[in-house]
Image (tube, rainbow, N blue to C red; front, side, top):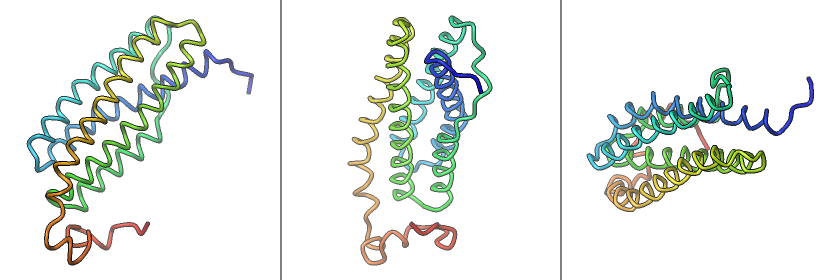
Length: 182
């Protein structure tokens, strides 16, 4: 394999982010429907619109670079989305809401790491306009993470009911047998 430079790595990394964001565009509506909390549903629907703008920003960068955004599958996001889908199947009510918030925060942290990486590369490559677009997205991801933390402080206490206290979280699981041991 020929030696690749930082620009090729940058393009590869934004392709990965592009695929990750598109996976979220497909997954967020399903997750929003699964929430019992109307506040959480609204938050996920709002984040869906933000995610669509993240895709558009990445498309702008690809267009300006003369690159095709396709061709890379983000396996990390694929796994995170799969875990969110499992939570929908495994839990009910407020415990499901708490599980989905946790899954969403893992997604946000993954994206924060990815955007931080490509911003550093863009700056090193002298791509300040691209770095600026990516920084907008990074800030939105950070804000979403903060909102999720705030919502978890409201939701998590409601997930602790009498059944949970006496049986642990197993009492709120739909399919205990399908849950993987940690």
